[in-house]
Amino acid sequence: MTLKKIAALLAIAGIASPAFATNGYFAHGYGMKALGMAGVGIAMPQDSLAAATNPAGMVMVGDRLDVGLDWFRPTRGADISGTGTAPGPGQLGIDGSYDGNGKKNFFIPEFGYNKMLNSNLSLGVSVYGNGGMNTQYDKSPFATGAFTGAGTNPAGVDLMQLFVAPTVAYKINADHAVGLSINLAYQRFKAEGLQAFGGMSSDASNLTNNGYDSSTGYGARIGWTGRVAPNVTLGATYQTRTNMGKLDKYKGLFAEQGDFDIPENYGAGIAVKVMPQLTIAADVEQINYSKIKSIANSVTAGGPLGASNGAGFGWRDMTVLKLGVSYDLGRDMVLRAGFSHAKQPIPEKETFFNILAPGVVQDHLTLGGTWTLANKSELTVGYMHAFKKTVNGSGSVAAATGGAPGEANLRMYQDSLGVGYGVKF
Image 1 (spheres, rainbow, N blue to C red):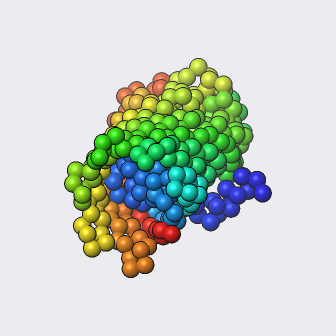
Image 2 (cartoon, one colour):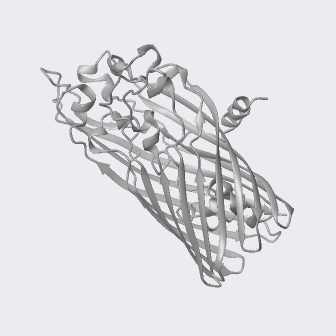
Image 3 (tube, one colour):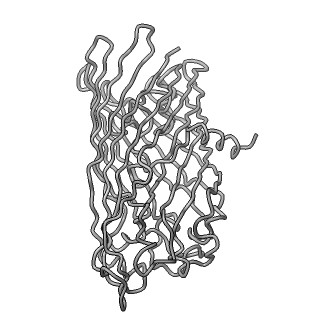
C-alpha cells in the first residue's frame, strides 16, 4: 500500500484532522507532556512523540507507547475598513467584520511507539499532525461589494499536514545520544470562494472550488542531546525542507504551479534540574517560511498566482522562544507549565490576502500534568491558551487589488485541551 493511501486512511480515521496551528501554521509542540510546557522538548524528551522535536531523545525514553487527543478551538476573523460601505469609483464597498469560524472545533490525535533494541539503541515511530490552517467565512468579503458575483459563500482554506516518522536513536555513551527520523509526509488542501482572484491567477480553473487535493513527500530530522553537567542537558535538532508533490488542483493559487513544500526548521534547547523535583527547560526554534515561495512571496511578487515566481502570502521567517517548568510533587504526580513567544509572520501590507490564513498569534501560556496510575501507566493532560493578537494592515487592500483603498485587520486567539495515555513496558 502506498504512503498516500496509508495517509488517506489515517486522515479518515482522524489522525490528520485539519487544524489551525499556533506558530505560523506549525504546532506549538508535539507530545502531550511537551504541550504542557509550551512545546519544550529539544533537551527534555518525555515520551515516544519525542522524535517530532528531537529524534535523539527516543533512546532516552525507553520502551513505551503513547496515544493522545487534543481538542483545539481557534477563533479567527478579520475587519475591513476604508473601502466604502457600497461599491463606487475606485472603492470595493466591503467594509465590515468577518468571522472565519465556520468550523470551530478540531480534534487532533497523536501516536508514538518506541522499542529499545538494546541498552544503547532504539527504534520507534511517531505519528503526528505537523500543522495546518483552516478558515471558513460563511459571509465572505470576496463575495460582497465590488466582488459580488466573482466569489461565493463560504470562502476559506483547509490545510492539514501529517508526519509519519520512523526513528532510530543511538547512545554514544551514557551521557550523549544522536538520532535520525525519516519524515514521510502527507498533506491535503482545498480552497473555496476565491473566484474574485481569478484575474490575478495564471490558471483560474485551478484556483478555487476544486475540492480536496493531496500530495506526499519526504524529508529528515536529525538531532543530538547530551548531559554536559550533572544537572544540565543540552540538545540540538535540524529538520530538512520536506519536498512535497504538487497540488495540481491548486496550481493557479500556489506559486511554482501548485508547489507547497514544508519549510526547514531547526533549534536548540537546554534543561536544568534545579533540584531533584524541579526542572526548568527552554528551546529556541527557527522556522524558515521565507524559503517556500508559495508561502513567502509577497502578494505583489513578480508573477500572477500560480506562476513560477507568483504572488503568495508574504510570510516571514519565525523565531520561537519557549520556556517550560516541570515539578514532581511525589505521590505519582508531575505538574507542568510553560510560556512561548514568537514574532508573528504576517507583514502589515500582506493582511488582505491573509484573511484566508490569519496565523498571527504570538504568545502561548500552557499548563499540564501527569498522573502515574497503579499499573505504572500514565494519564497526561495539557492546556494551551494563545492570547489574542490583532495585526492592523497598512496598504494591504491596495497591494492585493492594484490600488483600491482600505485596510484589512486580522485577529485570532486559541485554546486547546488535550489528554494522553502512556504505557511503559
